[in-house]
Image (cartoon, rainbow, N blue to C red; front, side, top):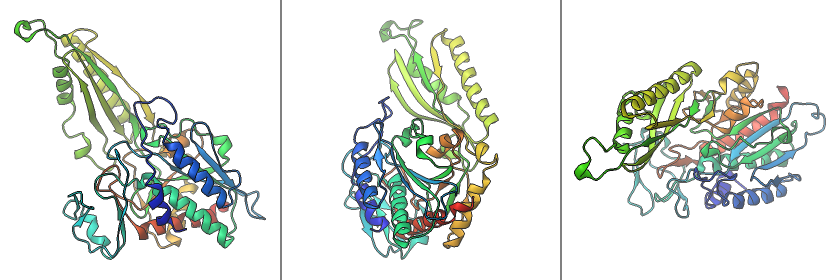
Length: 407
């Protein structure tokens, strides 16, 4: 089966993770895809394929004769999608020979336009997969799953020599929980790659340090007619907090190695208001300074409005994997670079402005850079994936599998 055929089926299985549920998996629907993948893996000859009680899928392919003492290599992708833009079934759409111009997304009234996404003009003549414009597509990261299993099928059918190959599919990556319960000893790999990146050629071994703070503002609600000197408006405090953040240090104004503060959700009323934030920076020192800045801001508002008016809870989610990979594991990055070049793909080595399961896994002792899937505009209705990029991702995974014994 070709990778795009797998992807078209996987995206139809609804798998949004949920920040509101503290259990693992955070949504039971992820088991539907997990169980399906186990069946498919067994059909591909992965005899020990299984899903555990927390919705982690594992399986291994034994080394071919003569390679039993080679390092074990792993490939990992995640099954969940973000919860946004997926409140109903995903309907994937294939557009052959895309003309590089405005592309209507089904009958949604939305258009994938080069005016908004300039890279589209370079994709003229290629076949694109999109959604119908009413949901996300879900190529993040179901494309990675499709690419890994298609590569496994290729390796098996061609009888390519390789060391032990370890395959895993995780739940809850999108809420930062995918690697927390990952069984590294049971997985059995000496090093691994997440196949969870973006456009063609992406190779990533740097990512943000991440804190997801929650700020709670406690006010005092009094009838507006007699509120003078008595009311304390939690919403007004939240607005003051937002305005105190550095104006240019927000996602919409930053790129590359630039960090940011981001307020992404506010709920509440005059009495109580809760704010959810992202704090990101590639540099560990600057990351710490950002957290201290918020601590001081909380102290300032508590002094202004009274102790207990502002509660700040930091939640570190992951750290920059570069600190671990640069410490004696750059051969893993070099292997991926060589494999991409061998299949005609120019590696684009850039920092991730986000995180992957590989960030946590690298800090837990499993070096795990990130490979491209070929997709773009993830987490929204304008997500797309050129099939030629999907094919090249499969070829790169196969080539890494062939070369892994050299590490």
